[in-house]
Length: 453
Image (cartoon, rainbow, N blue to C red; front, side):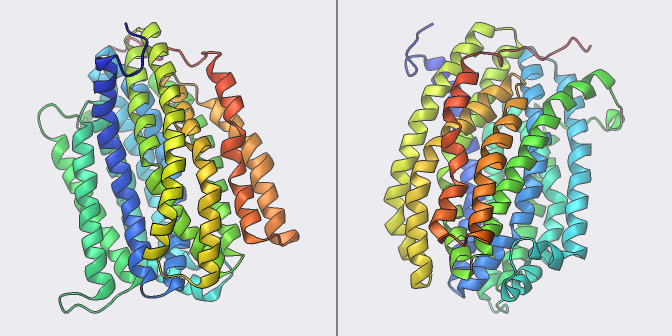
């Protein structure tokens, strides 16, 4: 087995086949937020900022959903590598139950308490009123998101990653086209602005779910075994909890922390909120590559560990670490190069534009840590069930350092906007040495499977 990362054609080929569709799926999802920012920004800065704040509700929902979906991905990849499809189906049904409950809870929150939810992120009445209009319609789509994510996850695990990219990409294209139609009132329709963006999202989610269910009925795909859907398997449920609960803790730590960063910017005025909303869109677009490598690489490592190939799983992990640093430095360059282009495509006040330039420079450094930590923690560590490390690192670096500094800077000392923003970016870069030290202990090299049938 060759040591050079690009010399192993089997490794590169499989990683490419997994990473490209997943990265494309991530990119297409990020493009929806970009389309919202550009189209709503052409109406008014406040509309763009308000929707950016409102979508933080779905961001938190997605963090919870991804904990369960990622827990399925960890166990599913290992059992798929072992060849145990029945257990993969059992875990799929378990994940559907969990995500269904989460989706209902978030829908109820958006339908019944949108005003209170918006006040978590801003005290600007104009932003609150606009955000409520968005949530009252978009909240219906939150009922469907969790179910769709489960179907897409099982397709990735069962070697149909390209189909997930097709479904997500088409749903995003539909979303963007409908955005334009409903926001601007094309083809004789009334201009709905933020309500139009929400309606476009809802229709796209409906189409996505129907398509996922259709694919699952085809030969070679996995569909839920409804006879066993409500069946509880104690041993498997315990394994699922051991994987998913730390991921849930980590997701909530990270999701609520990240959402608090948005809230800090929202409390520093509409210019800061608008600049941050644009910076967040750019960040999410550039992070698509590292998200794809983390997810695809994690599936590869999990397949090897589940099939008992510990040595190869460890080798794949070493190669993914090198790719993580390459991806980080590449992302830094892209962030700096994109800054002047972004300024041409968004309509911001002079002060908001100045804030945006500063945020982009700060994020250029942040991207190194983001790429390395995403690929190593969410990809490699998770593949072997080492999910508690993320909780510890977030508790120390994000909640022990970044969030308190940004909070006192916002509410107590009234630091400049860019200083507070820099505080929110400290955690990713600061924990790289700790992450690499933990990686070299190789505690993540584990086979999590059992003989179930």
